[in-house]
Image 1 (cartoon, rainbow, N blue to C red):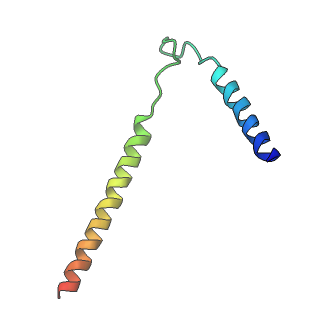
Image 2 (cartoon, rainbow, N blue to C red):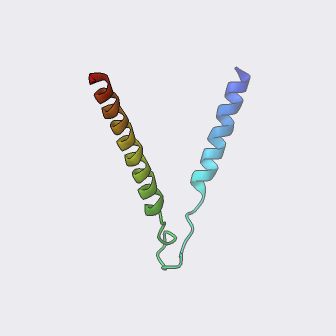
Image 3 (spheres, rainbow, N blue to C red):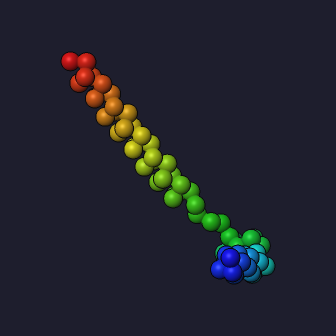
Length: 70
């Protein structure tokens, strides 16, 4: 029980310290939040990979069903 209490208190202190940090100010674009974050490239890649994987699964399933019909 003491280990659980110690772990939870440690996590709460760390979360409080992380939340208390001020956001970085004045990025290259001059806005107070810290500039633009280029997240589009990663999300686009994950979306494309997911669509390709899903398409392959559908193709394999269709091919398997066609093979069973013969």
